[in-house]
Length: 354
Image 1 (cartoon, one colour):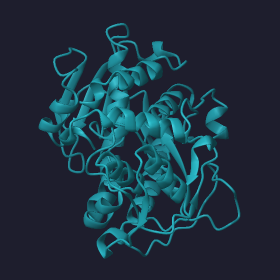
Image 2 (cartoon, one colour):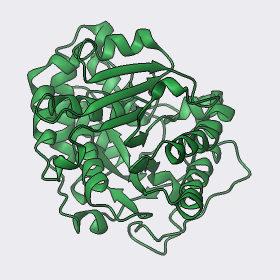
Image 3 (spheres, one colour):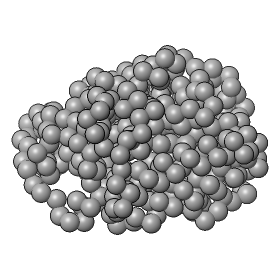
Image 4 (cartoon, one colour):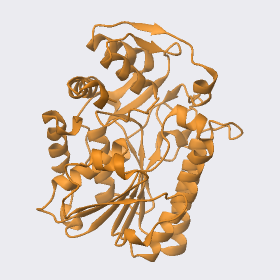
């Protein structure tokens, strides 16, 4: 498994040294939804790295114990780790128990899922968020973190170079593809409602297009497909002219940003997690990955189902000034992050790769 690779373990240790007030978490219980996802699983690995020194307990929520047992085999028998199988769109089981901190990272996050499960995309971001916030309010949660997205900004209408947290954006809500960004927006609004009505302490990390060795095999984002092609010794398939200009974040930097927001973020505030050194066009990203494996870039238009899930935004750069003001810095730029991802996954057996 990739999470046994020395470079992955080095990443985990590096993030576990993030300069935050770790003492806040001593003896606490952290509940994580979307536990087997790319960011949630890395976050859990970091928390487990702090044990037994910190005695922080992790309650991981997910729909498949089989999948969780494989992903968290190294932690499964630890007294600091517990998995609860649950469909959080329907209920939060009382067996979850103590929840000093909650990180809601469960969500559909890639084009095919948006297109084939549009209802689930919305309900996870809205109904499940409501259930989790209700649970947090009833169980004395000290801080709730809602994983939001660069997608809430919609299209760049040419009035800014990069999205700061107060940019309102433009989204055509009367489309299938709007389900993801609009439901993330609604999730953020729910957080503000619970903050005002229930006094919950809530912060909102807004992630950009994140990547790394913990990418899921089912992920259909362009970058994920590029890496999958490269690992299989294939040419990189580009399904547009590649002029889209986006921010990306290596998963270790995404989680160190998350930890910074957990510790230092102001209640009710949102924080972009991105770094300008990882801003790149899709065409240049494809060329970067192709060059790493001696392949070339070829162009292929998507089918109707796939296209329905694609973002229409052509420029989506995030301004991370606010997060950097809390002391956060990215460790990897796009070139070093891609190289690291490829190096870790290249050594995995084909069935264990993304």
